[in-house]
Image 1 (cartoon, rainbow, N blue to C red):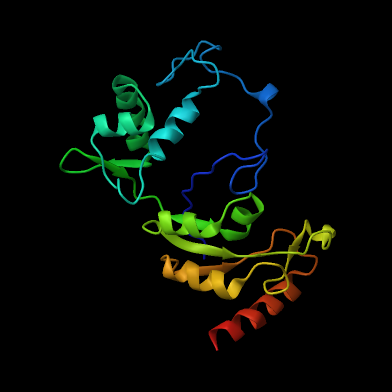
Image 2: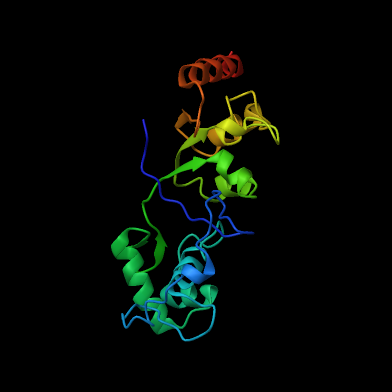
Length: 207
């Protein structure tokens, strides 16, 4: 069973926190340059609408679970009029919600954490799982093969046969709120083998 995924990724050294290649700089096209009117348009070099949206969503943390528009603008480094337009779009899209007291909070999106991609993308899983524990619904149980091996499977391994400590990660995911633990392999050479081997390993963890 796969649940809705709502996740935010942070770019780092060519890939985001989930391991996906970032769009080459030469391929980026400014909507404002094309004549489109977009909330949050900026003439500041290197500042895009996307970066402003991410700054607003990223302003929330354990100590700031809800904020007024002014507080949100200040913490995200965004002018209040711009924040007002962008927050409106984020509320309409479900990424944020407006509470009955007029404050804003993260929306009701749920997250299915792909733990192995977090690691491959250079991120530590624990801070992400803890930070978004209020929306974590499930987690991908996937393993990374030792460096230089399983190249025909894009460097992935059956759960328990790789370098990730799934005994610890399983406990962390469950403690962070994951109700479903979904075994996954992006390119198994033998799907049935992968399922059987992963199930056998995980069954020992639950014994």
